[in-house]
View 1 (cartoon, rainbow, N blue to C red):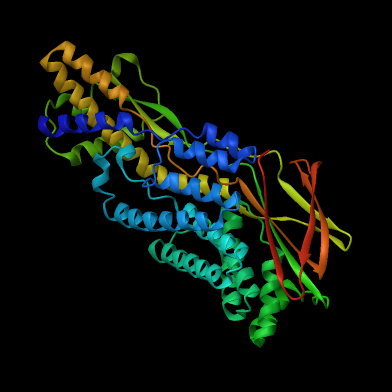
View 2 (view 1 turned 180 degrees about the vertical axis):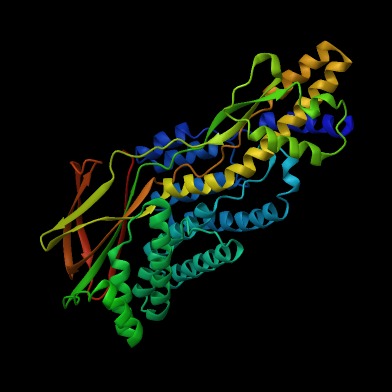
Length: 456
């Protein structure tokens, strides 16, 4: 590698100093207080970065909670278009990106984030009483799931199970029994993989829905198979409707920055070689450095301590992790249907080796730039080293207003107006909070959708 290849990289890294994400602290404070208009104002005051995907994610979700469903959908539509474009480009350019600062790379969103766009858009359309448009979101989510499965034979259905389950419910609501049956089959497959990967229990209702729809569609063989596994569900009472309550709790953990030090040894060939000739040599050396993490070396062996910054997650589980719904006509316990934190950590775990290698490659290039500059003079070497330190930051972009977990309460109620008492429990299953949803209308042979969010 020649000097001319190193110094432009350092110049490029200079630009990253002004590219850190906007602060979400004030946005979250307003959001938690239910001041959604104020949260939008704070978000926009951060620079109105409409072209930046994290901004679109945050704005779409906050507008959803502020009952600005049309505005939320317009924002999420732009997020979807932006994400699809950037995701395609990021896959095709992944190899070349080893030499580009992560903070200068376009953020395309994670797999689970892209799926959750369709969740919130579908709910928006439900509340706007536009069922056909809600089903369009289900189909988009289904195509996205199939794309993930086709592209990666090891795809563990992160984010897929809940998306498929909700799609089944929405197809049923619209009377599209066949697509509902297909969606529930996706959900069954995904939850069983999800259970082993993330510990989210298989919702019994998914199996019961397969039995019910197989019978309705006249699929005798499937009906017998699913009935043998899940049993026969109870018949729906006459003159009844169904409550679909989606309870979202807490916040997904934000990405944070973690500093790691790798020792460059005096005996390393790259130290002996004053002018490494190609980038392949640097990449191979970076792979060796990665394996030195947490290993100890004697001080006399060490030529240089290479500090790099990588993103990391710390669990951020909420206090409230359970919900029950009680009415004059019965009681139903909510079930965990999506672990957003688990999906975030699982996705990051699969991405970390690539992030680590890319980061260490850049670190080695910066070290080599420092060595070359130091030969020109000690002062220049110090300046380059200061620049290296100043430009070393991790890419911590993500969708921060997402909930930590999502629970589902699905219950049959007589048609009419109901007061529903919600009880929230902590990890010890102790009830710590209650709330009452008043005048909830249940219509005969229909579904009433609600979503509820806590932040504790």
